[in-house]
Length: 517
Image (cartoon, rainbow, N blue to C red; front, side):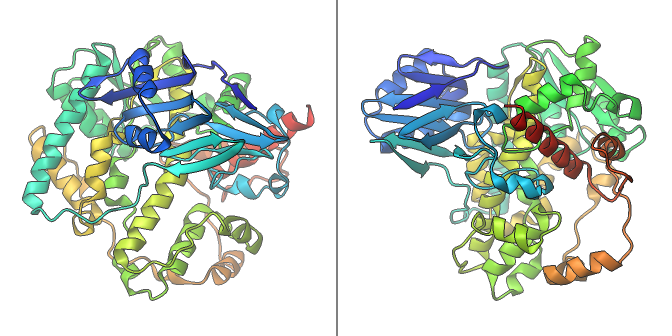
């Protein structure tokens, strides 16, 4: 027996003849209607055929579809719209939104281990028996059994052999095509760009303005005077775009923990990641001010920098003989704030396990893992804030052709995002005078010596070395003492990051909600 529970919260799920569909997909040179989606699904004759079809769908979507004796559930290549399933007492449930009332919290939550990370790795959630689909996955249910198919892995195939000049030209043309697809999707509706000081959001705003899109806005949040805000202000001014700045003051951030925030956290966390606070306060302010209109299309810049090479390890990785261990240690250090033996043991089964034969495989497995875990579950999950404030969203730099192109760019052209920077600067930023001194800062070739120390030694050093308060360029570190006071901590600890404290707060809230059921 299969029980499908679709909760119509903030986004429309379309009922199909034998399933459910939500999202937007570009296929065969146009955007599909729900009726066209259904017609394509009716023509699918096998699991393999469905996987092949999903590989060609360019956009953001989630799908539940029954065909004969098989039921399928699928997420897009970014897991931008989560889906969950459980198997219990010969009943399989499919769900698009998890709450503590849907089950029993796993015991692993009791030591607050996952409060120290922004997401729950693998298919696990914090609810016993409930699992989550990952990016680019297809779940097949047949004869009361569940089978997972990764129809779109984020590993890197063999690189292109074209010359750098040819690849640069192809990338420039690809960007133009991506924005044309966005413009066709928007069809004159208002497009809003969350504008930071980086290249990703800047290029979206620049090309849209160059193409004279008629309804274009941008906003920036953070601390007055920060380099991010000043670059964003300059970009918007030079492009002549309607731009709003929302200062993240202590008074504004006092909204954390009120009923609207709690409801949003319930909506966005899904017991699989912490609720993302970054855009929330700005969107709430802009909507209350009447600047952000309902059904505006918000287009964030995630995650062009990742594809361009921001996670490419430094040159020292090629010197390590034990690449698998090096990769696991990197992931422990990057995604677990305090990698204790207990937490390492919890995470071990979720990490890459196969030996890595060469440098290419090391990078491929690193990026596959980080994209399917941290990027899709935490970064991309930031779109829940856009939904919460009644806006549509679109991910231009998760365009299928963009992802496929960058998967095959040689790593030599991705060091310090070299090719990405050069194309954007030469084709758009330099002609528009949109290059700033901060843009020229490059990463060091080698990591600090301390990063090579064993984890156990690092833990010991942290106990004896002086610690510094953590800061955040957007001013969100001001939330740290507020959250600690709300949780009843006797003394403020400013060495904690804001995301860690939101993790502790979220853990507290779901525990309380679970105990009330």
